[in-house]
Each structure stands twice: as C-alpha cells, then as structure tokens.
Image (cartoon, rainbow, N blue to C red):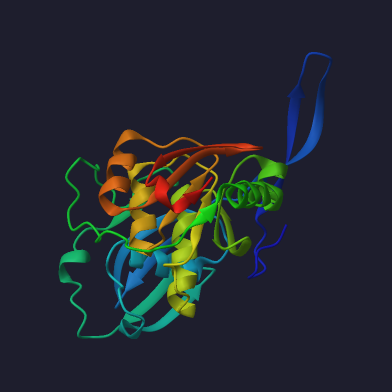
Length: 266
C-alpha cells in the first residue's frame, strides 16, 4: 500500500505462524515506522515517530496542537525532505517562539502531546467550545461503521490507529498512522493549511480517549468526539470543562454518551 507521497506504508516480512492446527512459514506485511524531525525557523523542535504519510499535515498539526501556530497568516513556508526525514517550517518573524523551542523532544507513538505528564491542572487550556452542533445517534453509528470500513491498513496489519473528520453523515478527512496522536495532528494540519472550519464538525477516533486526545480535539475546536473505545476519567473532566461531547464504545448498534449529552439526538 502506497501513501499519497509514494512512500510504502508496509514492508514484507517472513514469519512463523502457529495456531491450534498448524505451524508454518508465511509471507506477511508489517507497517513501516519512520521519524520526522520538525524544524521551526532553523531550530529543531521535536522528532515525531510516525507513518510515512501526510507528513506535512503532521508537522503543521503538531505545531498547532502545541500552540506554536494559531493563525494561518503566521505560517510562511513548509518544506518536507523525505530522505532526511525532516520538515522545515518558517513562520512570521514576529511570532514569539522562544519559550516553545527550548527543549528538543522525541515523541513516540504512544507519547502525550507535550512530552510531559498531564495533571489535573492543564497549563494554558483552550477556551470552552460553544458550538450548537447536534447529531443523531444513528448518524454516530454510521460514521463509526464507516471509519472501520475505511481502515484497510489496520485490517491488513493491525498496526495503525485511525481518525476522521466528519460533517453530517459525510467523512471529509480520513487519516491513519502508527501513532494515535498523529492521526489527530494530521487532521488538524490539513484543516489549518486548507482553512477548513471545525466548529460544525466531528472527530471519529479508533483509540482510547485520554486527556491528550481530548485536548487535541479541544485545540482543533471540534465540539463532538466519537470513539470505538473508552474514555479516561481525566478526559471526561476536561470534556465537561471544555464543553466537548464525548461518545465511547460506538460499535455496531450501541454507544455510550459520557459528557455533554445535549448535542446528541436520541
């Protein structure tokens, strides 16, 4: 399977497969893992562990989630060097970046959104979301089913997470990556670069809703977060404070509403 920039997302591997009936050698595929070093104004900011797909969106979305980029006019250029595994971003020289570029970080696929522990006190939290968006429960179930249907790379390898941005019953953006946080950053980056409004959209997500995932959703200004998995208690506390509707265990014909139920039409 190829990414949009031509990079292979998988690599072949000969494995020994053992089950209750047989032990045999077979050809399989595994997902590729790469690194992307994000440089801002010639300074190295972070190295992200990711899949080789939509890395420009990932770099920009990561900077949006970190609070570095807030306005489209602050971004001047983005260049990707695939061979070096690096993104080079130039911003408006008036943008204050000093405090955000002090520490170099290596962020793994399971890491949080800043390399530091999230506590009950969140520094510089985004403001609450006042969107009046509502969604029918049956639409939520359809969107979750479509996310699963589109997850072909996961079905082949079991090695990626998936996320999508939807409006109404339509999925507008679909992303998959070895890092669950990366899927949201890629969506954020695409929305930022293409100036796609998010206050009338929903996120559908394949993984657990942790506080980091909730905060990334909040910083995207998306009012409804839908997942096939479970939320954590801190994520739900943040959802209540930030007025984000959270639905979990959305599978088949069932779902659970955990926060801000007024946006869901039963």
